[in-house]
Length: 372
Ligand code: B12
Ligand code: SF4
Ligand code: SF4
Image 1 (cartoon, rainbow, N blue to C red):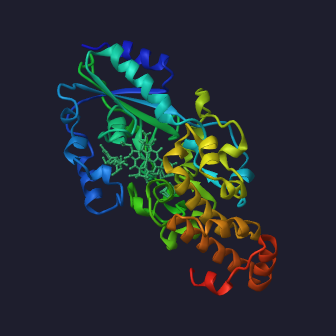
Image 2 (spheres, rainbow, N blue to C red; image 1 turned 30 degrees about the vertical axis):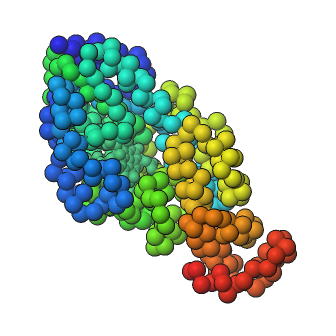
Image 3 (cartoon, rainbow, N blue to C red; image 1 turned 45 degrees about the horizontal axis):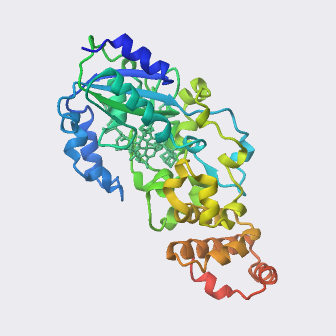
């Protein structure tokens, strides 16, 4: 039998901000998940479709599990001036990725916690078949908002969630409280603010339309219809949380130094620098951060879109170079960006002529326009 207070204290001592426990069994919200998958909202995220039964019951993941221990760790950082974030000449990175890779920060601590608490345990931070938001809600960490995020009424939603499956039962269960007292009320801010209209209805997200999916999970071409709405976002999106009154009022900087950015260029690097980086420079800059997951190819694809939306001819020489890259995905996005910049300039001939002079080689305007 696990002493609840002792386990909670241990988790807090390891730096977690929120701790809760839920009885292992069929996951609450299973039907929502299955309906969501069936509707195709998961897009290319095939790992979600694999073995759905395991995701719906942790006892199939770890036989003998009695308790799902859930933790939350804030990733909010000190305020960054909005003019840096929304500067169209910079590529905006979502807040959760401003510091080091959260898996590297959370997983070793969760493993240590699990080992200290029970003889059998398994730790996950979106690394396994565990529906973390549903379990977090059941464990009393917060309620599920209309933006689908787990919101803690006194901390907001800028939280990473982590799960440990434990073979022991806690000595007492507390009734789930937060969802009864708190919720979205009449608010619909997130639903209205989403740049790509990704919410089908409250608490139902079509991931295929979400900028987070388009910039991180999608490996192929970003559908043209979403490119303009992406603005300068090159990795993830925070809009539906940034507008949330719970975040605006209660979110506060994390004590976790690993999640604080070391410079403005970690939150919104200049697009020209990003367009110019090769694979080695990319590794040098982003090693150990969540951006590493998208690799050079994914980030540069997104940066091309942001450059097209910026619409400044300074980006043309670099985009021209990328248009001849060996990766077809980069060629296509660079070509789209070039066409968009030229269209935005409204003076195609002059721009191209100026561009030709800078580059020292000729560019076919007719060829560029066919990519629109
Ligand atoms: C796939 C995924 C995505 C996809 C799809 C997101 C989505 N909303 O479905 C994409 C790529 C779009 C994405 C984006 C983001 N993600 Co994500 N993602 C995941 C992942 C790996 C699986 C989520 C999933 O299964 N989605 C399918 C839907 C149907 O499930 P769900 O969102 O969990 O919703 C459940 C609950 O809402 C519940 N539910 C709803 N109503 C009710 C009511 C009751 C009564 C009950 C019991 C349950 C319930 O039912 C649903 C199904 O069980 C999880 C990690 C994990 N293993 O859980 C991280 C996770 C959800 N993501 C996270 C984060 C941080 C993000 C981003 C903020 C990153 C960013 N800034 O770009 C955005 C937020 C966008 C948004 N509004 O969701 C965090 C969420 C933290 C939080 N406070 O909620 C998680 C938990 C990762 C982590 N370990 O910290 N993500
Ligand atoms: S993360 Fe951005 S794109 Fe995705 S649902 Fe929220 S506001 Fe919409
Ligand atoms: S913005 Fe409003 S509707 Fe959306 S999650 Fe926050 S409180 Fe709920």
